[in-house]
Length: 161
Image 1 (cartoon, rainbow, N blue to C red):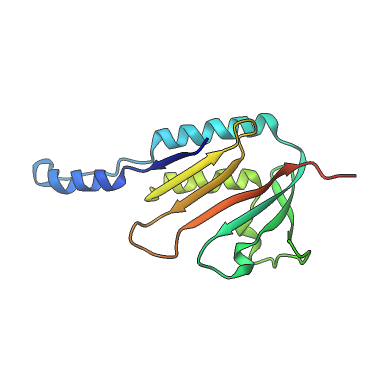
Image 2 (cartoon, rainbow, N blue to C red):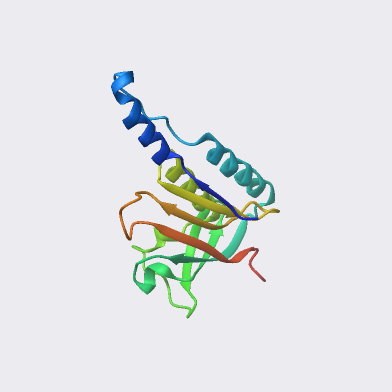
C-alpha cells in the first residue's frame, strides 16, 4: 500500500502571507503529526519483527554518481550497519557509507525530514515488518538535485550459515 503525503507547508505559507497583516506576526507550525504517527506505527512494527543480525539491499535514486546510488547490500548487527558492499562485491568507501544506513537509520532519515519541515515526504512501508520499502525526501520545493528517493531492493534477511 503506497501512502504519499505532502506536507501542507505551501498552504501554510500562503495563509501566513495572506493573514500576516491581520495577525501582526506568525510562527512555524512544527512537524506534521500525521506523518510522524505513520513513521511511529511502522517503526513499532519493525521493532516487533526486527532481526538481531540481517542484511538488506538499498538503492538510492538521485542526481549523483553511481557510487552514491548503489545498489548496496547493507549488513547490520543490532541497530548499526557494519558492512557495505556493491552488487559487484566491491566494498563501499567509508565516506559513502552514511548514505546507506540500517533500517533504523532509514526511519531516522524520514523522521528527521518531517521534523525539519521538508517540502515533501512520501513513504511506503511493508505491511508486515514496517520496513520503509520506498521513500522520497524533498527538502526544498524549488531546489533541484537535493531530493533523494530510496528503495529497498532486498528485504532484511538473517545471514545464512
